[in-house]
Image (tube, rainbow, N blue to C red; front, side, top):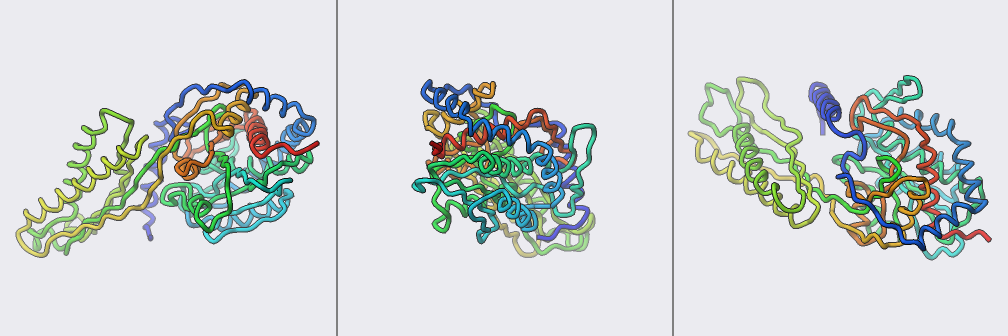
Length: 441
């Protein structure tokens, strides 16, 4: 899809202004609820954390602090929009190989996968960060430093997550930690926007590797334990007509007018529906079309995002959208005075499944126990992340926060401050080793 420079600039300004007035952390979470950790898992994680090799791994993470900062800057400055992650992926594959993985490969959609073999090899646990950012390839991603704070598009979401994944691998190698299960360290593609989770969908396809447990790193402070997937549908809807001169062809059905009516009917009906029941949202995020102020457009389009906690509500607001579009189409075709009728193309461009996992799953208990070990109160939350796919399939999965301090995700002035962010890496390691099974004598 081609965009002119003006369209890209307007999109980026809109993105930036939106983020200035929204919460900085865990943008798609809804706050969460307090999680309860069973005593047996508290005992397990506390014991594991005291092990000499795990303590050595924790020290290795501390020792990597300067290196992690340098690599965060380096990776951030490699642009990686959805469908254009290849250059960053090549560099990341080299980092995973250098960190000590047994093997590293890139699958057919661009996921970078590193295997660290376990002792028993009966199970497979994943630690994942996503390679892509929301920003177009033209975006200036040069990192600027003010004091100890890094500023750049994508510096937190999710480039910091990638650094954490490779840091955990290095620490396990440095400390000589062995696990019972195989571990896959993954830099995945297509998590953001129109990427539509294509990387993780490929990983859970029949062509993907076996995966028994999934841990994502994506957004938020220590304390975030996202175990619920926020489902969403996204559409690009295009009204089409012959187009013509605003005076000479007056009376033709006008795609722009039809689009405006569709948005009106949809927002009015969806507003009424979403005021009660499970939390559900809707948004017309982008609109476009037309050639000049004195031309009847030959096409007019909008991109729509709808989300809900439960599939039933998502299906209902989806039906409201389609009914509104058809109402507008019929109305404006009835109004035309000459020429052919309008047509409409409804294309689904995003489908993220919802789902929930019970708090008593061992992976979730271990993640919450590790969170408590580092002095934070675990909050079980809902989000739209790579974990949506395994959650929807009933595979144990969590998304953990990147730690440190960060703000303005998805904005041009995104920032990251290394405020004891090593703790988030240690937490991820502790959760991973607990789930993969500590195999050292």
